Amino acid sequence: KVCGDRGYTFRALPMISNAGLFGALGVLRIEGETPDSKGWSLIEGLTELTAISLNKTYQHRQLQKAFEDLRASQDVLVRTEKFRALGQMSAGIAHDLKNLLNPLQLYTDHLRDVTDNRQEIFETLDRMDRVLTRGLETVERLRNFSRLSPEDSEAVPTNLNSMVHEAIEISRPKLSTNEVVLELGDPPAVSLRPADCVTAIVNLIFNAVDATEGKGRIAVRTGTSDGGGWIEVEDKGPGIPAEVRARLLEPHFTTKGKQGTGLGVFIVYAFTQRHAGRLDIESEPGQGARFRMWFPAATP
View (tube, helix red, strand yellow):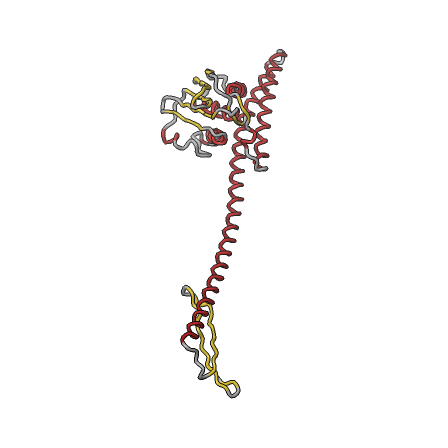
């Protein structure tokens, strides 16, 4: 190249980093004034550093885009998971309400039969009032969920024997054809949400009634072990096969066909987990089934 009366030469040095081409560095020099080896080393080093900087900038932009995409996907996943959890909780509350409201219908029929017995009417109304109270507390769980408040924040020291008596009272209309045996020990107070405890016991009792087809013996017990208290419901039904027992804790798994929701045992299991407890299941075909809920003793 010629500029005025002076000649120039041009050399392009490609800017390459990690097999990526990010441009070229143009070197314009006066003819006859060729840089020495140190000069060329400096220029080549500058070219290499520039390529590395451009590569890092490119990688940073790619990482930033990937992070934004990941965050967007995470937001979608969180919303999806919350809707799934809300749907599962709604199904569980519907299941619990059905168990609580079924006895109410039987209680109203009983009221019609004892219209001349004032004392019996008041006692039945008291039972219905307790059922309605537990039903309202069950619905309250949805509002707690929408506020994202931890459910165990409402846990209080609770007498397990009182919970059993209340659950038996609610379940009495459905237990009318079963032989019910109460064997209550002296368990320590445990920290839990009373409404959920009553619901869990009712679930286990109703399952026992279904297993015995309303004709067998059902035992409800309380006791103490491992530094805590427990409640168990045992039936003398046909028992649970091993392949069914392995899936009992799966939500929506049922052996009752269209009449079952598959949420009863799962709700009980979730309740024990929320309150640092556990659910033990023992059953053999032909030997009935026993469900035990254990909880650690409440801290003074």
